[in-house]
Amino acid sequence: MSFAKAQDLIRLARLAATRRTGIGLDEICEEFDISHRTAQRMTDALETVFTNVEVMDGPDRRRRWRVADTMLDRLQTRPETAIEALEIAGRTARGDGRLRHAAALEDLRDGLLARLTTKDALRTETDVEAVLLAMGSVTRPGPRVNLTPAVLDAVIEGLRGPFRLRLRYGTEDAPERIIEPHGLLLGHRSYLVARQPARGGDILNFRMDRILSAQTLDESFSLAPGFSLENYAAQSFGVYQDPAQYDEVIWRFAPHAAARAAEFCFHPKQAVEPQEDGGLIVRFHAAGWLEMAWHLYQWGDAVEVIAPDGLRALIENHRRSDFDALP
Image 1 (cartoon, helix red, strand yellow):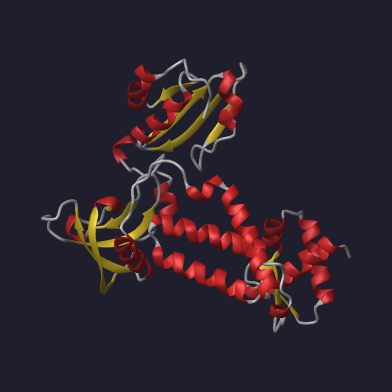
Image 2 (cartoon, rainbow, N blue to C red):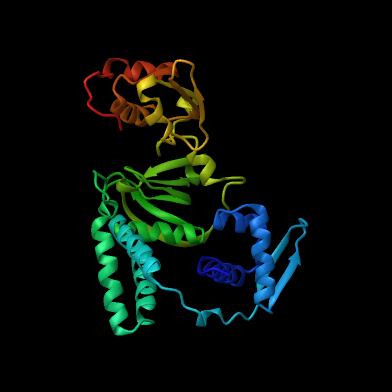
C-alpha cells in the first residue's frame, strides 16, 4: 500500500469513527473525489486492516461502515493545515464581529498547538503566519458595514434556541419589537431573517447594521412550517428580498466575455446556454434588481439584460464600452 493510500485509509477510519451513523459509499466518493468502485475497494481495505469495523444496512438499504473503539486519537496527523484553517476562520469571525465564534476557534487552535513539542509548535506557528500573510483573502478587502458584536451574539443565541429577540431597530426612540429569528444572511449588507408576530406571519428582513440593541428572551417559538434559509436566500440575487421583483432573469454575454462569464456562478440555480455566435445566456429566478445592477455595471457593454424589463431599464443608460478588463 502506498503512503498516499495509507493516509486515505486512516482518514476514512477517522470519518467512520467520528460520524455517529458511520459513512456510506456516496459520502466516501464525495469526500475523496473518487469513483464508486474505488470507494468499494477502500471499504474492503477498511474491513481488512481494522478488526472493529461494523457494517450496517440502513432503512434505505444503503450500506454504511462504522469504526468502534478506534483508539485513532493516538494516530495524530500533521496539524499545520488544520491550524491554518482554524486561524483563517477565527480571523474572519473576529472581523465579522462574531467574537464568541472567534474565541472558540482560537481555543481549538491552541489545543492543537498544545499537543506539539515546543520546537514543532514554534515552527508550525511560523509556517501558518507565512501562509496567512500570503493570503490576501484573509484581510477581506473591500467596503463592508461593521456589525455590533453584542447584537450579533444575541442574534446567534436566539437562532440557537430558537428564542424570541427584543430589538430596538432604526432609531433610538423607535419602539421595541419582538421578533422570531429564522436565519442570518451575511453579505455587503447583512440581514436578520425573522417573523414579527405583531405584523403577521410573513418572513421579513432586518438590516443588521440598523439593529441598535438586541436581547435574547427566554421564550421559544416554532419556526415557520417548511422554511428553508437556503431556499429563501435563493429567491434573491444578493441578500435583498422583494417579492414584487421576483421573476425570471435572463442575461446575454457577448462572445468576447462568454468564457469569463462561464467561470461565474451568478445564482445557485442558474442555467447556462452557449450560443452559436460564441455568446452565453444565463437564466435564473431571483429578485433584487439594484444588487444585480451593481454587479452588471462591472461588465460594461459586454452583457445585455433580456429580462426582466425593470432591470433592463435600470442599467440601459449605464453600460460602458471603455472598461479595460472584465470582472
